[in-house]
Image (cartoon, rainbow, N blue to C red; front, side):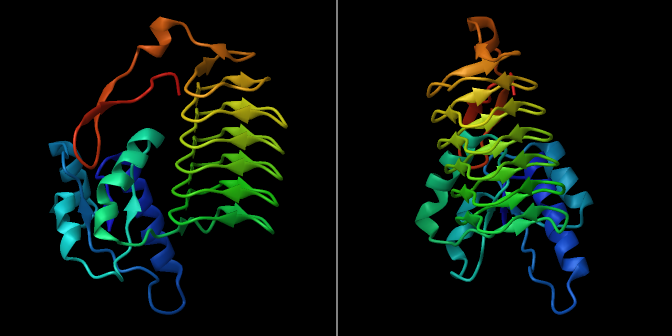
Amino acid sequence: MIVGAGGMGREVYGVIRLLNSISDNAPPWRMLGFVDDYPTESNVESVHRLGVAFLGSTRWLAAQPTSTHVVLGVGHPRLRRETAQAIARYGLPAATVVHPAAEIGPDCVHQQGLFAAGGARVTTNVLLGRHVHLNQNCTVGHDSVLGDFVSVNPLAAVSGYCRLEDGVLVGTTAAILPKLTVGRDATVGASACVTRDVAPGVVVTGVPARPAGPSAADARPVVMAAHCRQDEVDHPA
C-alpha cells in the first residue's frame, strides 16, 4: 500500500513494479493500491493510468491485516513524518523498497521504510534512519549517519563522516563536504555547497551555503499532505 498519490508515491510504485517484473520467483510485492486523504483529481487520474487502484482515504488502512506493508510516498521530510505519525495507530509495518540499480554497500544499516531510487549509492559503514528517501543518482559517503525522515534529492552528494539529523532535506545537486553536521529539520537548497555545520531548522542556499534571507525562506508553494491537511514545502530545495 502506498500512502500518497502524488509524484513521489507514483515513483515508488514504478520501482515496486520493476522489482516484481525481474523476480525469478513469485513477485515480492502484491500491490493493493494508493490511499491519500486529500488527493488532487490529476493525481488520481495518473494513478488510474498506471493501472493501479486508488482506494480512498488513509482510513482504509484500519481494516488491513498486519501483513500489509505501507510505503510513505511523501517527498518532503516534515510531511512524511506527520504522515507516519497519523497512520501509526494502524500498526502496519513499513516496506523497504530499493531499486535494483541502487547500490547499498557493506556494513550499511537501515531502519524500516527506506526508499532508494535508481542510481542512488550508499558506500560503506553508513547508518540510515526510518523512512529515509534516497532519490535518483544521489550519493552518501562512508561513515555517515542519516536520521529519520531524511531526504536526499536527485544528484545530491553527501560526503563521508557527515551527520544529517532527523528531517533534513538535501536539495537537488547540492553537496555537503566531509565531517559536517546538518541539524534537525534543516534544508540545504538546490545546488548549494555546505562547507560548515548547519544549525537546526535553517534553510541554507548558495556556494558556499549561507542561511537564506526571508524572501527565500518564505517562498513556499502550498501542497497537500497525504494524510490530513494542507501544508507547505520549503521552496529552495
